Length: 455
Ligand code: FAD
Ligand code: NAD
Image (tube, rainbow, N blue to C red; front, side, top):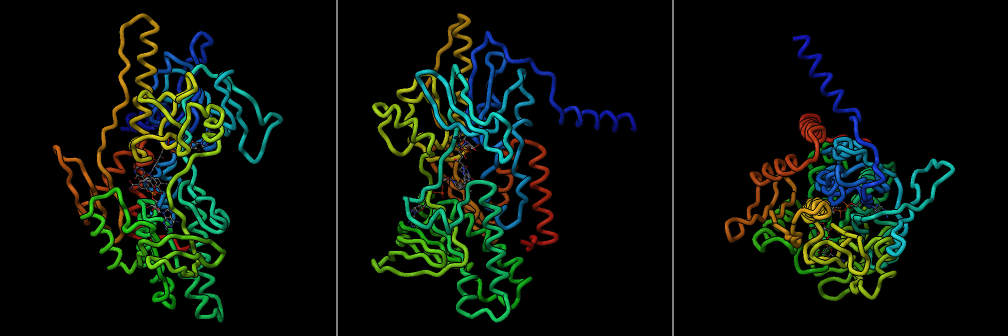
């Protein structure tokens, strides 16, 4: 028994440390991957490093499992549980994969080089350099859409990255503690405890749902004197929330929100953002002011500065301002040997993890075929085909909704059973056993002890 335990421990230790890997081979082509998100990691997991040298450039040295990020804003799940160091992923490759924690600031398709900048706070003597590539894979994701509205970046919180979830959590607890401050004026208490979410897409809806659970399960218990003052409002410009879901599930979500006292203002567009209030154009075209304590902004995506820079450089071929234009083989129009996948592209599919993952997997197979073709084998490279596996969203009170393709039709389901399904899908989609273990542990911990209400 002691031997078996010892061997088990050795196995775990061995897996946690870099394996023997082949070094870079100057005779092989070098593929540079920009990003460490869904598209990049899916590509990295599948690319055959016997065929290529691979280098990764990303300002984040970890992968982030975004579908569970809304749960982190309220502490149902801890942030580190949904992060996976990029080196955990690359250590399993046959050849050493170089990783630079830096931001790519420019792509020059003519000289086939990229410029990169060290993003860490502590820098060495070199913090800017250029790197050559044979093939470049852009998987840089997208920026938060603000429509250039003044005040959004200054006063609102986004929900895309780890630091966004941390900021939301801190601001929320600040609002609650300030509302409880001695002799606080009643109208100020109302403002501080009014949480406003802008955007009724899945990010806004899931965040409002998680916030509701936190208020009901934890904050109302720990702050009984404020319990009847908490309010959540969701503002959406279109006539309904979640336009990508079936009408049945839209209705189900809106009625669940009503039961949960989440006010949904549809046909209402935010026009101005100030530090304590937003101005909206309501359904009757009146300009109305809404005071808030916490403002979360989830109005979709727009291209990152690097994508815009590349698009401007090759503007004859890049005709859409909405993202990098690629063909059916994920090749960037106007930039030979540059490929793009995921949210940074302008494509006919919604910008989801599902799409980015399938594109990453597809591109790795293209590179495999290119290598075989170079060896003289006959291989055909076929265009990318997206296979939609369905849409899921959490809507609060242990309920989720799911639109799933079934036979040649679609099945729309919602409720507690769907929530169990939602959890099992996300757990099985996590990239590592470590993440699964941590997330299940967090779920159990918050069920037994409640969520942590410390700042
Ligand atoms: P990302 O995953 O955003 O990765 C981009 C990477 O590029 C990051 O590592 C970033 O640091 C890096 N990068 C940025 N700039 C540079 C640069 N200049 N140089 C180098 N690297 C750079 N989709 C679903 O299908 N299901 C869901 O349930 C779901 N839930 C979501 C919940 C939330 C809260 C959010 C925000 C999104 C959710 N999505 C979901 C959408 C999904 O996260 C995105 O579609 C997906 O992340 C896109 O993958 P990507 O690889 O294109 O970009
Ligand atoms: P989105 O584009 O899906 O939704 C943004 C919403 O904001 C839209 O409904 C839009 O009408 C509204 N809006 C825009 N400007 C507004 C304004 N000024 N005032 C009021 N409302 C305004 O964006 P998202 O929710 O951030 O999602 C981004 C992508 O990530 C989408 O493709 C989405 O499918 C994906 N995602 C998926 C899931 C999931 O599958 N569970 C979760 C989160 C995100």
